[in-house]
Image (cartoon, rainbow, N blue to C red; front, side, top):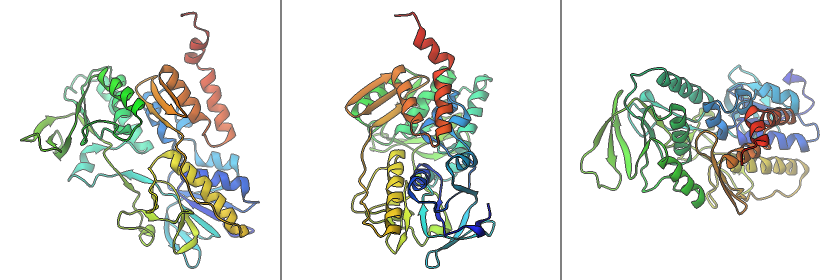
Length: 400
C-alpha cells in the first residue's frame, strides 16, 4: 500500500504483541476509517501462553502464531514488517529501517519484553530463553535430539520457579518421558510465589509427580559450557554446589526490548512511564501499553491480560482525544489465572471457579481461542479443536 496516498495521518502502533494488537483491533472498531498502521519486526503475532502447546505439538504453528499479513488482510489494517529507528515526537513522525517516513496523528508504543541475560557473565552464550517463537523452535529441536540419543545423561536445568519455569518444566518432562532429570532452581522459598493458591498447589503437585528436582532458596552463581554452580540465596549453603548439566533454560527474568528510539521516553528501568490515561507525560498524543509500560502511582502486573486491557483503553482514549471527549483512567480487572501443567493438563482459577486436570486443559484452550485475533482464525482454530480425534474420542467415549 502506498503510504503517501493516505487520506489522513494514520494512527500508528509500534509492536504487535497482545497490547499492540488489542489496540489495533479496538481502533478498527471505532476509528471511523482512520488508517491504522501496525509496525513489527516479526512476521507473526505470537500467542505466548500457548507456546507450551506448540512445543509439545498439541497445537500447530498457525494456531499459536498467525501471520500479521493474514490478520491485516482480514481485519483491515496496514502491516509493515519493519524496525522503527527514530521517532520525532514534536513533528509527529517516525522513520523505519527502510527509511520510510510516516507522519502519524497518534502513536502507540507496545514493544514488549525479552529474556534478560544480564545477571550472569556468559549466560547468553549457554542458556536458552523461552519468550519468543525462535526460542520455542530451538527447544523443540533439542527435545527431539535428546529423545533420539543416549548420550544426554546430565540434567536439564531450568532457572526460575515462576509460571514460565514451572509450565516449561512440566511440559519438557512429559515430552522426555523422564529420560532426563530436570532441576528447577528458584531463589525464593517456594515456587509460583505470585500465583493464586489453588494454582500454586496444583503446580507443586504436578512437579512432584514428575522427574523434577526443585532447588529452593537457590540461584545460579556462575556458569560454563558444561557445568554451573548453585549457591544459596538464604546463606544456608556453605559452599556452592557444582552441577554438570545438559542444557540450561533461563526463565528467571525479562527486560524491556532494547531500542535506541525509546531512550528519551524510558526511565532508569528502561520502561516507559505513563499517566493514568496511558499517555506519555510530555506528549499527549503518544500512548504506551504492555510490559514496557509503568505507572508509578498504581503499578500493575506484567501479563497478557493487562496488556490487552491497556490496549482496549488506549484505543478508547485515542478516539476520545480525537473527538475532544474525556479520557478514561486505566483500571486492571483480574480475570483469573491459567497454568499449563504438562501434556493435556492445566489449572484454572478465576471468577470463583477452580478447576484442574484434562478438563481444565480443554477449558483453557477454549478461553484462549475466544481471544484469538480475527474471526477466520477463531473459526478455523475452533473447528480444529472440535473435530480433532482427541476431542471426538472424549465426547463419544463409552468409558465411565
